[in-house]
Image 1 (cartoon, rainbow, N blue to C red):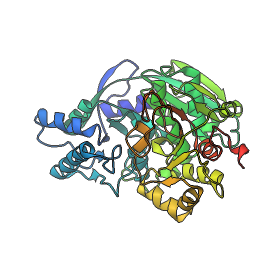
Image 2: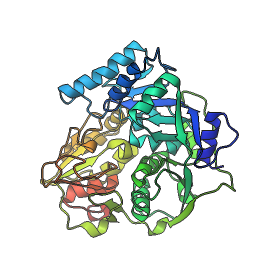
Image 3: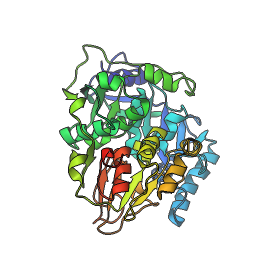
Image 4: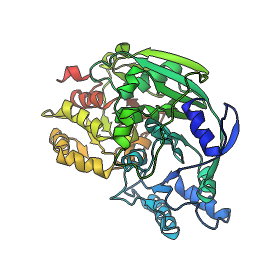
Length: 418
């Protein structure tokens, strides 16, 4: 079996499962946010549930429109607050303690290797970076799981992606996953497990692994996953709130397709409007002017991402024609950025340094685009109208390219400004 099949088998009480099989499995963590939880809470009450299956395994995190941007957002966030108090949920994170959900749960050791996690948010697949099976589901599935602790699945087929070779300077996990999506397309892994492996992945730090798995959904994947190893152990040791288990794929496990990439040939990569698969080398896009740069989100808002952007922009200025918005993904990352002097670097450069929020990524708040404006962001999605006006455009990149772009006022690579 593959790592994905092993985790699913362990949660449905079977010795083995195979692709296409329908199973009912026990979940370790159920997750929802201020957009998706209100629907789940409403459905939970409709079905007449007497209580939640486990008050310490349901995470409700207001992060999309929080801090609350308007009256409607305030009402939705209040639903999470009231429900959490009513059922005494141990994993409710209020503004001031919350962070972007998919950065917060690994950081806090709430999701651990070997877990089965469902979340009413498509980027729940992020936790595959820890060696967990994690996938996005609908709010009604979350409502059912909050009551029963179970969810149904069709066991996905697995695709294997092997990465080898030395990464070029500034190229990281974001470039690898953008390159992959550009290669296979936004439906290239539809309802399949995307298993990332190879020597390059083995040496990839945890933040980059989480970035790669975060965007599995952008290729249509059911989940992204990386087998846990020494780097995983180093990350979870001391922070894991529960016991964890390392699973790995059998050598004779079956894959529907195997693709190999020579990473020495992968350049700094940008996704152009209006699909994550519309990728081009960053160096070839220097004619494209940019109005707004966003560094943050569940994809690239970790401390390492902020360090990368700060290294490029230190001692320089954001182009007068650009708004640069930097959003640490959690309160801990915010504090670390202040202690390390990163916040000062960004503010001195002329950037906004924000409290944790999803904010502009989904066109929520903190950086909405006007008609005809272009943004380059370290976020994960660039569909029509994603960050504001339907006639605006979003380009996706890693933090180094984002910082260089903020300085130049057009899409740029770090070598142009260092």
